[in-house]
Length: 319
Image 1 (cartoon, one colour):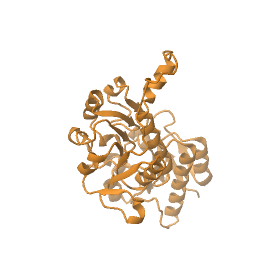
Image 2 (cartoon, rainbow, N blue to C red; image 1 turned 60 degrees about the vertical axis):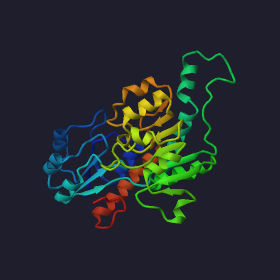
Image 3 (cartoon, helix red, strand yellow; image 1 turned 135 degrees about the vertical axis):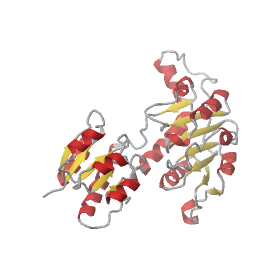
Image 4 (cartoon, rainbow, N blue to C red; image 1 turned 90 degrees about the vertical axis):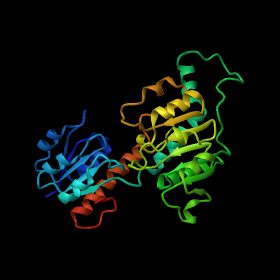
């Protein structure tokens, strides 16, 4: 018999086909994420729960899952929405989608940098509102990125992919990481032992670190004050890394020239002040939103679940 999945999130048709080719699948959550009680009612008779970031899989839900459930698979690279310790206590495997989002998110990081630096929010509004009167040498002059120093917080796969693309623009790369990379991975980038040291040289700053207790509120008033005046800030990591009010203050005063944001603390809620700041270029968390990436995310879950149930190692198994 084929294993059965209970899927609680909407998926592209191509990913649904990947799942149904390998497993028996019940799809829920097409229009909204199901509640915990709806999940518990629907998952009876299934072998794995498939969720995405909007669905909170807390201890209370995990402890009530039927005994036949052996795995939780999240259609995301982040797993903050899952109580990992509770899952371990129940003996449940957790699978996620690492590595396959890197290129898409790195592309959007550059889009955010360029969109913020070149005043794209103002430019689009000028056209769409019918206010454009033609070319002018003083119109919407932004900031060039060529030759500037890019500070990257978080030099994992994503940070390194951003650095590779930024080098094509002639940017000089500085970075902060929990540990210094091997020389072969640095690509000539300059390592900083402290965040404060990195901030002081970052004409452009990209936040590409995960959400942890250590990184919550990492970019606050004090660290913003260390940036070169007129720096450009980009967040492609997690919204909780930024203290929104502090960044909004700096943007309003001109201390920070512009910001490019794809993630927000408490999303889908967005700090309302950002909407009144023309120097904020915002995207609705689309970093990984290419069909190639969505298919790759589906395939890595299919491969991981197949390996897990066959008793083989799964490269995307968290626990």
